[in-house]
Length: 342
Image 1: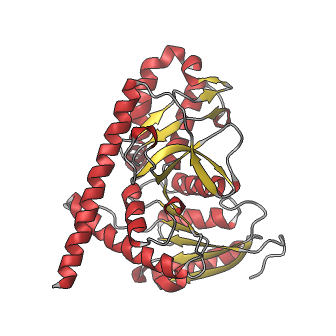
Image 2: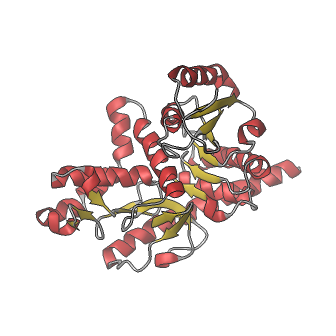
Image 3: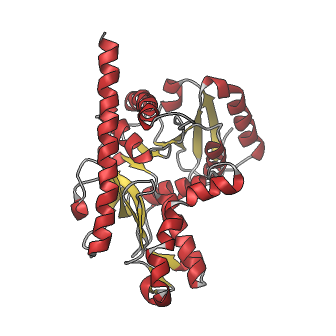
């Protein structure tokens, strides 16, 4: 497979869990240019577990059959080293889901193990400047554990996805304000990709005016129902379709990577789970969602926003949960190391 539509060197993009629902949606969008840009050829590296090997080959067949002009080649494999070899972007969709009867610690231990092995493979075989987006839950802590096991990868290159929450917030505001979603900007998702996240509209605009002004008659809705809807939207989707968010998660993953690599629009920011430097009083060393701008493949936390007392309490609550998750994950690492030493 070769691309004749661009003279640019193809970029290699890894998508783990590629035979699953989200992976299946992402690969099509990435091949279509939604992730890297409409003039950037791509070589897709698709990874999944051995039981999904046949389905993974089916995904590769469909990608080829679709004849995407930007798609140069597809590597479909269950081998971690082959999957990570030379990749410049890694989208980590695969993870161990929580099943009935499982304790939170059991799920954390499974994912710590998965992300430890994937981190080592990326560190050894990916591009030295690989940009990593973690989607599998608990996304923020999975990203942090990946960082712990890949010390040579710059911390700023490891992110978690809160763009789906960000996009959900934009959509809810647009519907309430009676405008198009592209006319809403600068909402913020603070904290963890969980029910403790804080969807913040205090600095956002709709049709060029502050959201709080546009929806002045809806202050109670903004403070309560809007926050609840965004926090619980994933559960609502599962209840409605019997399956978790896939299409919207895939589109948001493409938005995250696209803006990271190609830059955010002037005057606008997006939400990304990034390595905290202590901004806004949140603990350093967590993967925490902040408002960021992006330029030349680098993100920067937006500074100087006023945080009222109510909002500050919500930022802290999400940080407290992330600290708890981090301690649980580190405990799992210690227990695994101790068991291996016996």
